[in-house]
Length: 378
Ligand code: SF4
Image 1 (cartoon, rainbow, N blue to C red):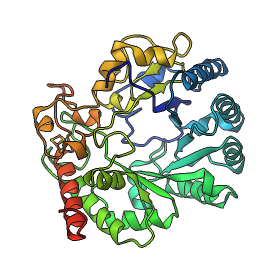
Image 2: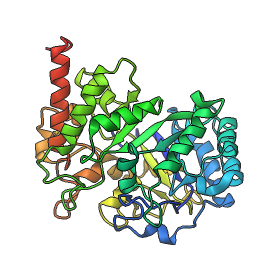
Image 3: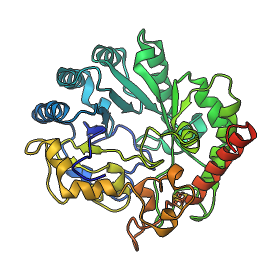
């Protein structure tokens, strides 16, 4: 897709550059990038005003509806008063056709915050990796203490809200390949969440993801295979976007989210100072890996100007893998080469297959076997 036809799917807002906890695996704070230190702790009112102006322009400039996701740090660090102001301002320029969601660790959720989200038609996804012993291994507070109890309390509050069906969009879980996938599946489904978003750990060919002995090993693929078995046997399963997308892609359909398949997605980030950057997961490749060379900002540039630029076109193109192994891979249309951050090596940049290549082939093979045994594919 050329820059002239690219459109924005998601604008991810870093509304708080600090977090109230200190997950040891976090790409923002604990993978070498120190950019957050120079950022305003919270997005200011002036930046919110400039941002809303740009979002309003974008909604007029492109036909595709786009989603807004509030990220941090921890978005709830804004506090209920500022959060309300922000959400009301966003809804003031974007109708309910534009989904607005918050990704939160759940610790700072209160009834007041949930009422604010309800009023602005904003959904919440909570990050929880599994039962206490799994979650508290990495998702810890500033003194290394576990956070599971507080996260669980936040989910309980969310589920108790009268508008929970609209508010609670799902949970997000980072995979620990050393955990029991059956236990994690049973625990996360017991939360009554409408969806579970499983994520691979950050990592690349120069810094292997946690739990992978080698690029060729399949710890994550085997872990996901057990989840697939539980999922397919579950009479009342939640949505699992990762598996749903793979199944749809194997059957010839389309996925809905970046990192799988060959769809292109237009993702831009706005930092707390108003700067416009690439997908911030690229911070995990090298310090500043998420920065454009051009100093784009909501104060000085329209999103449509950024999207039309040559630099955005180059950023957009990195979604497609260039490694010869990927280009000739029989599963390219399903795998898509994975997330760019997982292709990185210091020697070859992004010109590699995903560090999860073997895991991807393992889980795709498992899905093909299951579908074949059900008579759904040849
Ligand atoms: S990462 Fe591996 S499975 Fe995915 S497209 Fe590339 S070669 Fe194929």
